[in-house]
Image (cartoon, rainbow, N blue to C red; front, side, top):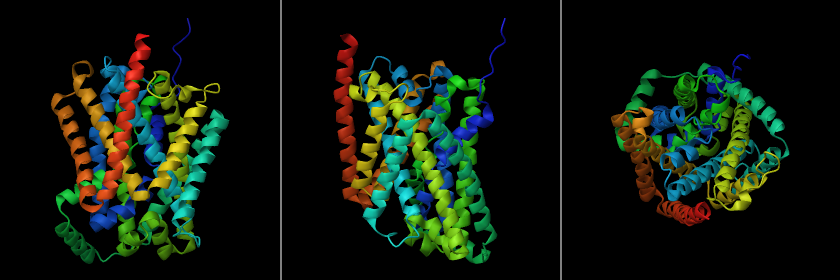
Length: 437
């Protein structure tokens, strides 16, 4: 009798998958925006996102261990509300467009940093054109070869983690701080910023923690899912929170706050150039390019397969289920087209906030599913309710912030959700007809 075959993914590999999914250019994107809102408190506000991510992850851990379905978000919600076509359609549309928003965010960040040292650094349309170009490069790579995409992704993940570590050490090494003055500045920012402002920054930048659920997509290939899913997800969130805090703290200590605010779309590159010259700028630029490239390729790889599966179930147009072998070619093309349109329609701020709202909303829906399934998953009733409240609160905070600062942008985000909701409602009826035919 043959022995039980050993699964290829252990705890270290699973943590690497989650960390690679989360550190996808997020810290490069959110730092300047966070500093512009709460000053020296930005590192703490960003790190606080790790606590929000814990509440989001709780549902994924409980449902992941119970269902052990590689479909993750879509599959969990569909199976938790198995009698509702509307629930399956809504989670399918929201999750897919959440990933499309992150693709646009990573592409925009890629272009902002790749273009940061050129004479076109401030040219909005050059930036948008470069963002769209990189989306289509990785769409073509994904269509070309699964093996080729996997090799490129491995190289990018290891490279970006190494460069992030080097950037953090170099910034800390070149930090010469008057600690008394820094403490006073920190106290001043705390007096001028309300707790709600700090929590709003945490909510706005939440998209930087998206990606830990990629662990569950590998459930068929992992050892001991009941033990390794929670250890990998919670461990990766702690690790990423620490990385974000160290990088953000090093940046605000080493780089003048005015520069971080002025060059918020490529703040780290501009700041590193002021301290380390062209070498510093180039190192940060390479780090951002590798991080965002890795995130674009990996997100398009996983999300396109989920989109094709949703189309198989009748909740997306049937054309999106077309595959060439195992490669969902039409879903990849659709994601590239929609992400390109989002880049054209808005700037970094709109894409960031739409992405954060979407993943807070998706995480809240997952927390609701976990609450419903608590007798099966063994989830804590009080912790599940607290998770729902925290994630709902984060969503409301972003909307309030939008209402007071950019009402037109808020209207654009609401319009996007109206379109998504109407589309999901329509396809829920089509899915019901398909199931009964």
